[in-house]
Length: 287
Picture 1 (cartoon, helix red, strand yellow):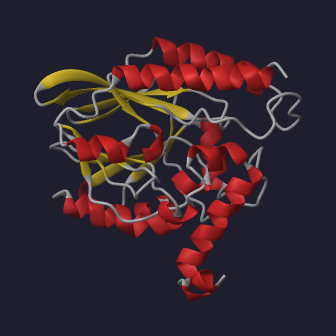
Picture 2 (cartoon, rainbow, N blue to C red):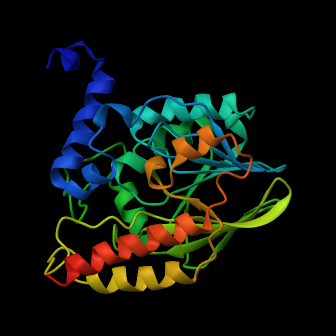
C-alpha cells in the first residue's frame, strides 16, 4: 500500500487499470505472470527486422515500421505508455512526426489507450477494423467483457479497414486479417520484411487469449465460432517473424538478450503459440 501511495497519479492509475484487467480477466494475469509492476517499464527499442522496431514498454507492445515516405506504428500500449513510445522512436533514430499511419491490433486499454495522444503528437491517421472502430471511438466503453470498467480517452478512426486490405505507405505494405474472438474486431497483421537482407514473412498475431466466458456468452454469442475461424486462419498465414501485442507472448526479453541479429525469426515459436492457444480454447469450449 505504501508503494502505491508514493507512486505518481499516472503510475497508480496504470497499475489500477492493469489490476482491474487481471481481476476481470484471469487469463491475462496468468499470461503476464501477474507481474503488474513490470508491464510498463521503459526499455530500449529492439530491431526486429531491417525496417521494423519494437518501441513499446517492457510488455505493452508497440511496433514501428519505417519507410522512406514515412512510418507506420502499430498499437500504443496504455495511456502511460505513450511518452515511452515517443521516446523509444527517437532512441531508435527516427522522428515521431514521420509516423503517418497508426494501426491497432485491438481496442483494449493496454493497446489503445495511448492512441489519442499519439495521434495528437504525430498527426498520423488511425486505421482500424469496423468493430474495433466502435470500441476505440467509445474509449473502450461497452466492451463485451469489461463493460465500461477500463475506459480511456477515445480516438477518432480516420479510415475503416476491410478484411484483407493492404495498407501501403511507400515501400511498406501490411495486410489486415480480421481474427475476432479476443475482441470482436481483433486484427492480425502480415507483411514481407527482410532480416539481415533475407526475405521473411512477419505475422503480428492479435491476442487469442480467452474471454472470461467462452460458452453461452450473451454479450458475444458468436465467440466460439469466431475463435475457431481465427485459429484456422492463423494456421494458414505465413509466420517466420513472430510478434504479438504483449512482449511476453513472443519472448522479446530472451530474444533481445541472445544478441542474434535474426533472433526474432521464430517460425517454430509462432506455430507452438498458435497450437497451445488453440488447445486452451478447445478445452474451455468443451466444458
